[in-house]
Length: 488
Image (tube, rainbow, N blue to C red; front, top):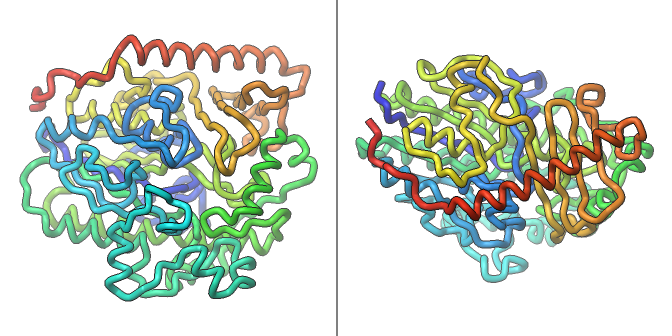
């Protein structure tokens, strides 16, 4: 084993933290993710910096919070910063699948990219200057398949579209499903690879982001699955800030990502959606297993670090919501597994980490200095010592007004070991949860007199943290860390 391991970074899109069988979800069939957990390190408290694709991914690939890198929507331009550093250090850097850069097809420091973006992304109806045929679009066209976007599905069967609520069975050849396409392409690429250089491979699966569209074979496993379904009460909805009601109304009105959402869906409707979603995750798990098998066949696995995670979560009806755009754990907490037998300890840690902390951890693993101006922190010590000190006492997430979250100018979450505060700029309403007593975040304590002092103190900590980060980023520019080539 050398000091320059191959690194495989697998990022799914919109995957909840409770979607891996070995991590307390017995209704899930995920044997390959279970293996990563059983043989590697799992993080039970990994939080994203934003419940939205591009801002979250921009943090991961720049090492900064959204208020420092400036990306708050999926339509703002951004590019990775640290991939070129790996390339300069001798790594062969490849991306296959989704990264959600803007523009979609920028090199981003990679030697090669095979780009696959959103499953439901219309090409010309609302993408404007970002209209782009990715590699999956071209493959569908070569096979004579019309991409099943929301517009195609609605035009074909308006009543069926409304009833589906975003859950469909993939109707074309299984190998043309976006997650199968990405997984098979990654496998093919690894089988054909000739380079002897250490590899950094980022694999981006478009699922389980909606539409929830598993193949018939994958869905069959879940047709009778007993998956927990929320019982959302009127009292819970009444305790939520007004921004949540506006968000739910927007989801009902706009059919975002092919999901024809409704107020007060039935238990059976929610169960149907969750079964489709679970099947999407199992499809990804199967392709992950094939990729691991190929690495082993090529003699690469013994010197490989695999990191598996997602860019944000998915509500699936919890709290009356669908998709993301809130600060509930179902939207901002994601799975994080690190697998590298012989390099790291096996176990689970409850330590608070941010998704963006993956970046300095990777740099640490290959001995590239971490920029002083970064707000991301390496959790490498936790990989070798489960008793190592925590790297954070709190995690943060941010969201601004957009086309779905329209009611609040700025929302910021701070979650420490026990309490979660969600602060709304310029508003009297907010959210405050005691996660020890209320892990499902059903009882908003914002107006509780007994918690007023704790809430106020944490509001001040949010402002202090943001100011400190902005000052730090300005005083310590993002120059390339030196030296690069001292990797043994």
